[in-house]
Length: 171
Image (tube, rainbow, N blue to C red; front, side, top):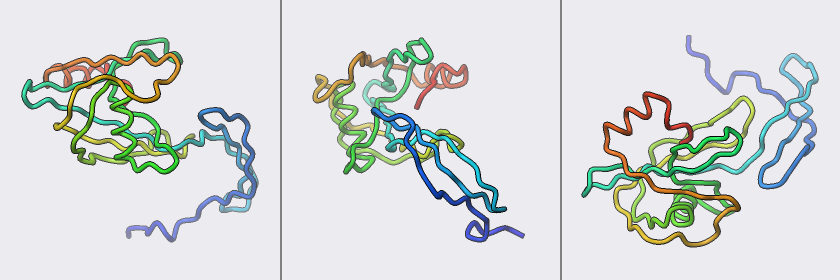
């Protein structure tokens, strides 16, 4: 028989303490497990993020961003995107981030999926979108310190190969 989610036991948070906070938070919760055991659980508490896969139909190319990521000491390929602000919808956030990071004004976005990138140690979701109607322009708005984002055009076969060879590391 299939178990219904509402019938499964959950953990209960009885206290929360912020261990570190700047643009993200590291939190420890005092929790009670379903069997009554008390424990602590540390996790990354953040706002949701959003990214967009851009496709230029006229050129039959995908546009991905490339940027340096200090924690892994690499230039990586990813999708333009970033964190949602307090009152953003995922669609608003991805439009703002595309304009800020790479100067692209999105016309229409289609939601692809929402997923928890690391549900073991993080409480945020990533919203992924597809867009094939956009305008190229200049970066506008706030640019984060050290943010050097470049646009790279890839043919479909190149993108698929990069995905299969684990060269796209961050959605």
